[in-house]
Length: 384
Image 1 (cartoon, rainbow, N blue to C red):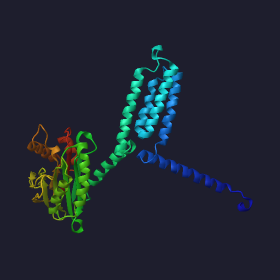
Image 2 (cartoon, rainbow, N blue to C red):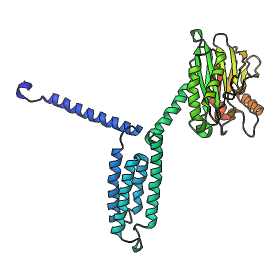
Image 3 (spheres, rainbow, N blue to C red):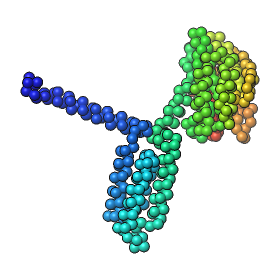
Image 4 (cartoon, rainbow, N blue to C red):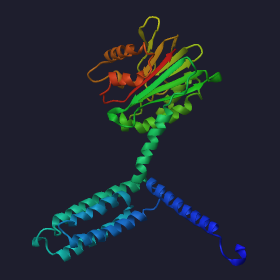
């Protein structure tokens, strides 16, 4: 009937309207996401800022005491953050024309307040030059400011995900805590771990301390964590540190060294091997004696020289035993030597023997090295 009369039923017409609205909303949403990530065009911001310049000019001419000529720095600052260099130059030319119009209409600056003074021109020009330098730097790097923060967030989350420890079978408990230097989000300390071997009954954990700290070491830590994560489980345990050492040597970094400790733990028997590349000794608590024992393996720093050998130290975790791996930021400072820091760490750790070390890793860092300006990492493994 609808086809013979040529009329569209109300229900079908309403459905078409809803589909059209949905398409518009989807397109706007995609455009907004692309713009935030830096993948879209800047024409919306460009058009808005170009419109803002004459609006501010009209307001200045109408009420110069409330809208000073210096208000033109507002679109200039926003343009430096939002626009590409080519569009930014057009915006600057428009702002310069607006200053000329304001100076002509308002009269010489000696005639009273609210005029365009040499200082006004200097402030606007200096702001524009700064914005242009920032825009050119972003263009050269290829990362718009809208995408820069997202990229840093993605990098931080990748390091965090790679540092997650795999779930252990019943009878085992593990904790990991990491505190970057200066309260930053990036750290030169990282952990990679995997369950390997037959039936995944072997836990391999690598704790690494990259030279430097905070943001300076964060990019190298990200690169190394990805490489070490690929090597872990793909090579026999005794071949991991030599391969990691070769990888660092190939990078040819000026600050290319790192310390690392590699734990290979049999989750059935509790026996383990500990390989070290210039890293601090591990600490093992014996539940029978209640005493802490240092487990120090021998090996040079990673990335120092070719052909390095790494000898393992062996041990066993019995029921109630605890093994701690940590970086030097936790126990060594300029005003405290290594032995004193280890004594303080074990003294604080003794308080958690009764509670089974639940939530102890984070609290130990807070108690031992809360205000230390260095990256700190602590890994706890306990056999129930």
